[in-house]
Amino acid sequence: MEIRVNLAENSYSITIQNGALKNCGDLLSKYNRVLIVTDSKVPKEYSEALSGCAGKKAVVYVMPSGEENKNFDTLTKICSFMLKNNFTRKDCVCAVGGGVVGDTAAFAASIYMRGIDFYNFPTTLLSMVDSSSGGKTGIDLDDVKNAVGTFYQPKSVVIDPTVLKTLDKRQINCGLSEALKMAATFDEQLFDFISNSNFSDEDMTYIIQRSVELKKSIVEQDEKEKNVRKSLNFGHTIGHGIEESANESLLHGECVAIGMVAMSDKKAKQKITKALNRIGLPTSASFDERSVIETIMHDKKSTGDGKVSVVLVEEIGQYKFVDMTKEELLNRLSAVKR
Ligand code: GLY
Image (cartoon, rainbow, N blue to C red):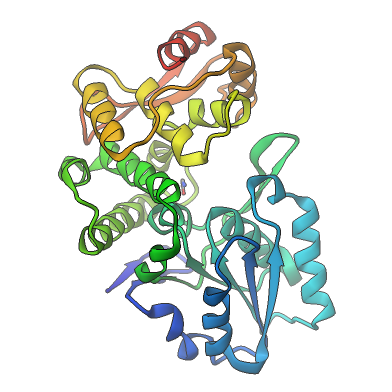
């Protein structure tokens, strides 16, 4: 299946197809050189499959895994690697991995020689349903997530759902958390589907497809996050704060899950909590509210007048933007503190 993202400039396709990673020869045939960026935790077989398609012109750069490596040091190393390998503007960068690899490699592609072509081959459910499309690139700086980055659309996104077979349950759940986020804000039918799914291969492909369709529609309306795209931050404001300050080690999608509970009300809160419990995602965590609040106030979503703009869900399939004070945020944090 092919989903087309239609933009004023730089439209592109998202392909969802079992086995697609092994069949990308045509896509890459026009380039002289192909840089494949992956990380130390992504099974080698995936970068090798893509490298096999690209042939002799492929070189692989393996970055260390983990959010802590989404930084200037890694970015510089990727760009230096391209220089050493004589990459020009006629060449391209391919990310094979999750959100960290995708964001960092895309950023490198967007600035190397003022921008060379970029392709994303997401290997985590989270990156398939959300981060691989939409053109956000970036790295973290001074503990602020995605503090530096660009909007730079990929030439194409290729999703091969068969790679999910090597992804552990916790990582799958993180992807389901982001899919549930999209459903909670835009699509009640998808929300009910995820809430009742047995997560068979067929169901997973449908969840990916529908999430990608929703993301496409949002990005087409608001590529640079001026309005409707901000809805994708549902669960993320508190989630990012918890991610950086929790007393336990939590993954991004797990923090988003807790953030969604904090930022929903009424029946939607019950439904979201029930769906997360069924999946096995956390709905609370142990943290120090003050340090979470500090992180939140530094976040890009701070309005500058001491309030923070957040996404609130009261009815599944709908959302609203609300400016919350520090006290309101503290109350919501207390509700998800263990
Ligand atoms: N992951 C949120 C966005 O692409 O806007």
